Image (tube, rainbow, N blue to C red; front, top):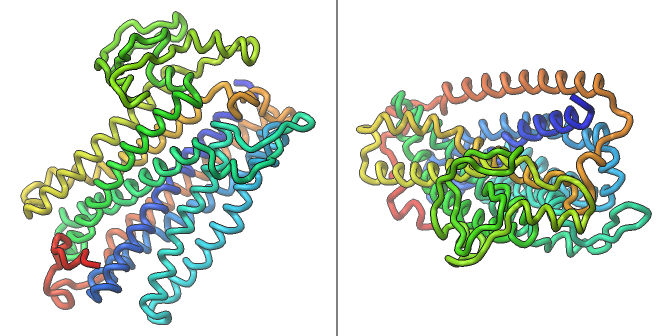
Length: 465
């Protein structure tokens, strides 16, 4: 493997590992803030215990997530110095704001929340955790502002062979940002909700602290369903925008080599041969691709071959078709996982409302497995987003091949790749150990003595805020 392949492999592996923690932090702290809000409004101790228990798990995830994120920025200088020189004036601003404003905000108010129990008033303490939640969302916003520039460059001028920002407001109003940001946040909320739902299902199967984890499960399923629908609608908005900003990515995600007919059919399954530039077998749904692309049941979608010819005229000779199989299947994995999550959360609410969770242990076991689905969907979505942009690092401006550091060697890249992978394996082991320990410990609460009655979250009084 050459330097470029190793650098991409290293950045991809560390980024995917880091992104396992980010959406869980965003979603889990939102759940903690919601539980504490109900506690403050209703003054029911059960919700305080829920906020503390899930807060402990959030703290573990947050701490390890911070460690994994440090390597991301180091790699820009180590392996991608040419990219950093080219786009640093634009890319650096949102990253600096994220570190100095959003992360500082998270850390400050998280400290106050940790040590403020019984020291701060209930409302001030509640405000602290909501500010932590807001900080995680703002962190995502600034990171996505930087990523959106790579997808759709705006607000810059070219000087001395570098992209230099000349309109910060354009960076904040980038159309790509405003379809990418809500989709990411809804995905994070689903991640937190399914984590809470899956762990609660485990505790319910064990019949441990049923009064606490039944309520956790019910509220998590409400958030999961709302987030799942939000993912679907925001994902549709992204598909529409791709037709304008990156039609090649849209064509690759559909395995569409030649221009479609009018109306365009959506490909459910295909055997794709990138060498011959054809699909040997396809299963299609008529009209659906036109609707996804234009929100109407008519309209043609341009194929990769005609787009390749256009790009060669515009950018010069080269291969502008991304890895088609990866783009095609990552999109379907993401969409399929999203559909399963919507169905599962709906079924969970049905069983809970009908008080049939105890009679369906198979469903609770399934919910434990479904903890992984948001992580799978998030990872597949980012793979599609980044791989589908290839061969560009910054779309239309800089290719990936031109972005890698000129002085790195295969040996140094291989050594750092192995080292980082080993470190991440250790961190993963620590995370699993601490999670299992906390989950087994529970809230250390004797339900029979201290909490004689369960609170039903479907009671309208609970959400009468």
